[in-house]
Image (cartoon, rainbow, N blue to C red; front, side):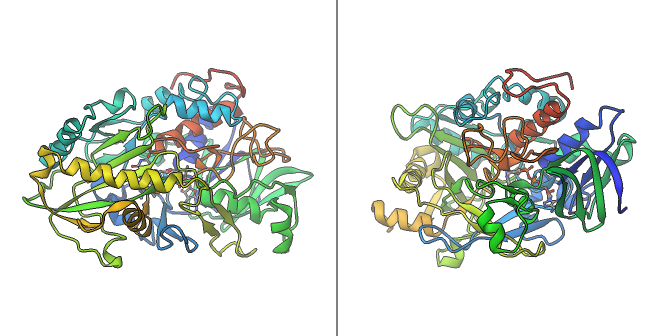
Length: 509
Ligand SMILES: Cc1cc2nc3c(=O)[nH]c(=O)nc-3n(C[C@H](O)[C@H](O)[C@H](O)COP(=O)(O)OP(=O)(O)OC[C@H]3O[C@@H](n4cnc5c(N)ncnc54)[C@H](O)[C@@H]3O)c2cc1C
């Protein structure tokens, strides 16, 4: 294995990485190696059957739970789970599928990601859709129907999220086919026996550091030996591990690297900064009648709400769960019930920013992850989340859903008023598991940007990043499909089919 040489080495066979590698290997003239730290997902029922996705939380074989720093304003007990296998977090997640809003992509362009607007990236949704099957979540659960009806009664029209996102309630689209998930590995790599000869997939190959010669990335040191890249290395390890690997390799803020005794290959102050997420709260009720078991993923419907009049895109999103979502309420003393349902508000474009930093120069040590939840100076995240709890309660009070309410389990009817609700929701908050932004894309004037709009790491030749870490700002919706779109566009950028700044970049699937 040591010394194997390929034109392109893609590090991380996750949501975006599987797409990048499969697309690059469509050119029979080039050789591609995909390095994945975890195992294959092929034929693994506990991974492929979507209904069981929560069984992968805490899985030692197919996932990793990152601990986070104590959160003075939020919940430091959150464990940030990531899929560690082919398909990455798309092999682990609940498969709620959205096209990013045009407004989100306009905000990307405004943040310096030229060529990544509604035309430049949005058009890749169709390309992903030709590979990844997306279908309605509806398993015919009567509680889900009651939630949608309650939304209508509260003034939020029923909408089809397949046609776009605006204020309203509806069934989600899921990237699945029947009961099976359509992860990036299922859609782009399976069957592994049918992969083209010029694509080598190495599982159980954890990258430890990138290798440079004269300011150029030339290979990767892995747990299975050294792999050399003749053309480019593409980093797709996700929002925690891509910055970690850059830092371990000497690419990052010089002061941080020197403090750990690491050589500075490129002084890039933005590596590991700008950590974004969707913080999520929960309101939970015991049901007065049995909640039906029929479900695709236990979170089949949702709602978007604007909150501030005049806001251009919704500030709040809600998932409706046909189960008790008591991960962080139960340990903090709130009651739970077998027969329950939940509404989970999340802040679609949260303003707090966190960091990912190295604890040690030892590659086996997890990074120090500090989301700084609810620390934005204007208190926007706290205000929107608190509004979310109020609105969730308003939904449950509507005739269609109130019939199902036995009692409010969390926070409980006694918790009232801004301060009490805010305290509850921040203390028990979870994440929607959407970390992003830690190798953000931006213009050359933005010294905090890590990659340029061609995804090239500033100051280094032959090195790109393509995964959720390049998001300059958060998108309003669940990001998995957007990560696949980033992978598609990255492959086109490498193949010269999508020059940065150009508005179009699709080709036939
Ligand atoms: C529990 C959960 C539920 C979610 N639900 C949804 C949902 O319903 N809808 C939605 O849109 N989004 C959802 N998400 C978020 C979404 O899945 C992620 O945002 C997205 O998959 C991230 O893609 P990525 O390419 O950035 O990283 P990943 O898909 O995480 O890929 C990173 C890959 O790199 C590998 N890797 C890491 N370090 C190394 C290394 N040193 N060497 C080699 N390989 C390495 C990892 O093993 C992994 O395969 C969920 C996430 C989780 C965890």
